[in-house]
Image (tube, rainbow, N blue to C red; front, top):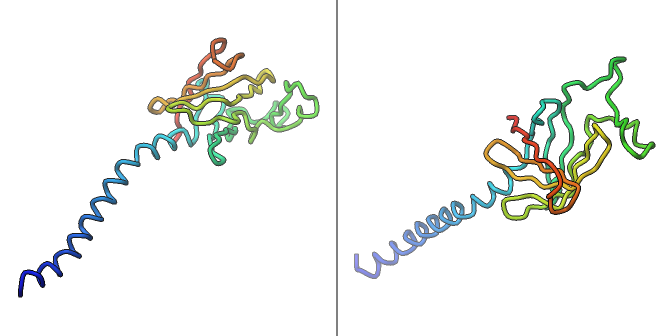
Length: 158
């Protein structure tokens, strides 16, 4: 077999090997960005253990709804409702399934520009959050910059 014939066999094999390696390198390079964008998604237990919030995305916007309550019913057995809501028409809506996080957008390692609703007092605050390991640091504040507020630690539930 002549050298050109050997090259004709070897070159396509070499191209396949190179393409596979390029594909693997690209996947490994892009994977940290995908993992970072996805790490906020999932279920988070509030620091007082009273509720679990599911953080989900709609396009590039992140929201969160209550999916579990430690005390889901009143003493009379009826579901807990949004009694402190300033809008009297909304006071009969159930807390279970209620969206309390809305409008957050990824900004580097943080999620910001959103709102958080506190059904314990009926107030809505500006919100930002960031993931640190298995802890979601959720900051609710009176101002958009987050100077006047507090940070809560929510813990990942698997």
